[in-house]
Image 1 (cartoon, rainbow, N blue to C red):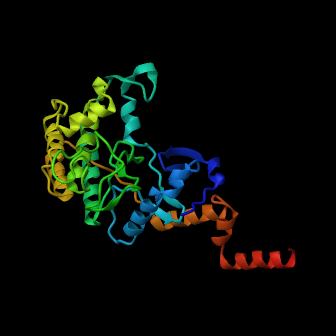
Image 2: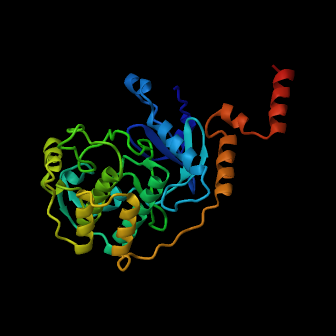
Length: 329
């Protein structure tokens, strides 16, 4: 499928991006997610993850019930998603501020953790994350790309799950992942692979995300293991020692050892065991109708180029435009 990328978005602040998409901040409450323009020929031929992102949000937006802990989608176009803006970015950035790294570089070797996160916030965030995954499971999906870059914080520091470009229905092969977010199977017909996506794979990633929150770094990052050794240790179920917080450590252990048969039970147990720790969340009401109108207004003003701007004009303005072209070709 051919995608359209509009360089008019470059006038706005670039606030994120990964292997397949860029995100631009276009209004105080809205970002636009679009395809990465510099794709290789191989990437052009493969199914683009943005299609899965779009398919998931179409499915999500058909439902009457909403999940507060998933990033809202206000408008879906074939090449773009208009999403709610999370002012406090992904959790990875918050935790990196508490780390000391070689050469003071974001990707430098971890030297030490200078400060640890408030357990009350960790408890709230992990409740919100598992609540989102319970909802995703109810839809019949797995997220399949759970990591510290896909957990965003809104202006009230509530965690919201984003990036469904690898999402699939439950029971599909888990791909495009690695330790510490997944573990290869050591036996059975799928030995050597990450297996089929399910509550087993989702909760494993949750365990590693919770480890990151509690210990201030990814598993084994403190001893700077290379990727192959990290994969080997995880495949052999040789995990880091858990000794910082009795409740959180127990939940990490349960996720890594596949204790829970469903994500609904993960969410229930996490909430039950952290209810006395978690800080109270405050939520700002989102007027989805108003936000959608704002998205359409931005398109009419040309944020995605003149062709789409015309398509979103009122009918009378389209006729006027056509008349002008006919009278003055």
